[in-house]
Amino acid sequence: MDNHRTHHEQELADLKDRLLMMAGHVEAAVNNAIKALLTRDDALARKIKADDQVIDALEIEIDDVCLKQLARAPLASDLRFITVAMKISRDLERIADEATTISRRVIRLNTETQLIPYGTVSQMARLALAMLKEALNAFVSRDATRARQVIPQDKKVDAIHKDLQNELAGYMMADPKSIIRALNLMTISKAIERIADHAKNIAEEVVFICEGRDIRHTAVTRSI
Image 1 (cartoon, helix red, strand yellow):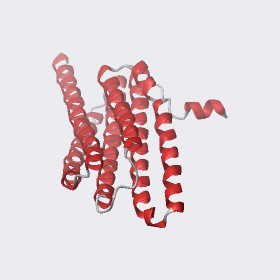
Image 2 (tube, helix red, strand yellow; image 1 turned 90 degrees about the vertical axis):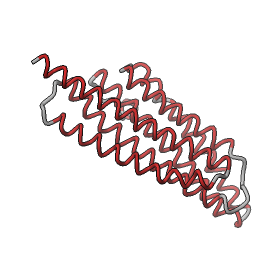
Image 3 (cartoon, helix red, strand yellow; image 1 turned 30 degrees about the vertical axis):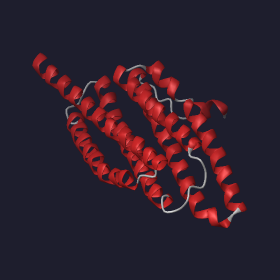
Image 4 (spheres, helix red, strand yellow; image 1 turned 135 degrees about the vertical axis):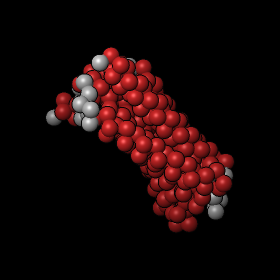
């Protein structure tokens, strides 16, 4: 029985390692997408799409491992970990998709002169990536308090996104020639906002692993 449990624990550790490997690829994809924007680097932007295939393959591997683990009727605490691992994997894959979206828009933006300085976009990306990194650190350390501190940061990203969308809408109204560039930047801004949303989701899932409580929508529930 002890040997069986030891083997099971090793499989869970391997699952966590795969998830962290996937997270590393995803963080690199987002960083590279933003770097490609700031440096107007088409080659780097195109590389992101190829890297996305690696991330997709890791998601499939993780799902396969999780399903095999679930079939063994794990303990309640392990069950939470396995189901959350699947959810985190899905969030990571969607973040990678957003990085690919950014890279496509970067290639289009690079064919024209730059519309605005990209400082605000870079600031949003730094905040979103910091949220992701901290949510993943909370996952590794199984620290619910640390995870909870990530969640309010989403509102900061939302606020910057809203301001940037309004600024870009102003450019579009003032100069029709700016419309295509502004729309591409709006899409990039929205992609970063979604990355922050997924980081928030991961933080909420970490709380669920640690406490067995689903805290999604709790703020909404209290306000009704």
